[in-house]
Image (cartoon, rainbow, N blue to C red; front, side, top):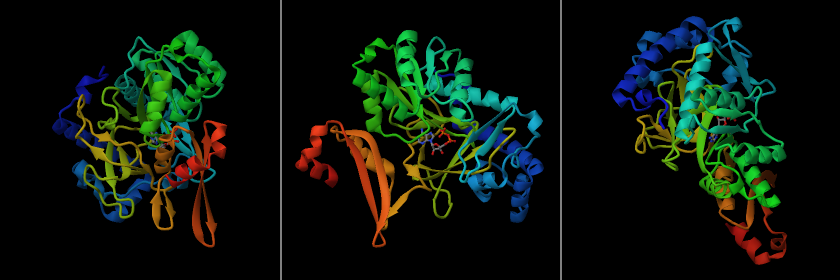
Length: 394
Ligand code: ADP
């Protein structure tokens, strides 16, 4: 099901026109209402009117997480706090959280993109959503909840943790859709296995997983153990929360549709900040086009991925690849770049190992050393030197 057919299948030319119109309004708003942005524009000698469309965005400066910290808590908001309907937080770069605010219209946009995402993942209004994202200051729980309500689903607000209760409710309430982090889906799946619970007693059909990077191997494991089709949802609080992009349940493995009428994506070189063409990997930079309380210009997400229209089948919007890592937590080990997802890929493809692992980086005589600690599925392996050697080599 396509939730908003008109917008989700809008011809690209019209989509660009809509984006350009919305961008002009957004730029005026931040220039006139947020001194931080006005100063940045003035320093560069640029007027909002100089930007003729999304193709000119590269002329404008990035916004980074440190800018949010420096303007804590409400310095980048375009309206008075009394005009807000909700405030959320996520982890900041220091002790202070990143604060984000929403007007009534912003919450409507949030609901809209979540409703689209749920439908894109296979959910329909008749289904029940077992929402195991954490409720509270994080955007995940309430965001999914409210968007699912808009779609017309029945929401079970379980929140995270208390796995016993999760298993019980999955069986008793027969929810068709579950949303949570991929690692929590693995926990649920493994707990079922440990207790000998036959997951066909559940009625799950779809799992919507996000908030952390995951691999195809993890997808396969979850799909097989929970009898679901698992799709990726991506987002970040600074832009809106989850629902910036979503993978279609019938187009798995080809990337996630970015809801481009609300969030304009760019990929830039992580060192120079220069825009990169479609297909090339770099830092995802997002500009909100419709947010009122807390619009963000060229937000540097630190997430590494690529963009492409090549696999946009049911919809016209651009797709982003899975996140390959973070530009800020990439490890450089003796000159070699290392993403933890690369290690994860190896580990999850060894059936004798559980998907849980630790990367421990230390220095030995000024040389970086990475120790990978893994869990074996069967204790007998601990004494099998040949296998240990083989895994270490991989
Ligand atoms: P969340 O609760 O989703 O972690 P935050 O705003 O605290 O929200 O963190 C956002 C960050 O989480 C993103 O910038 C990205 O690094 C990571 N993230 C969210 N969803 C995904 C996803 N589907 N795949 C990979 N990383 C993700």
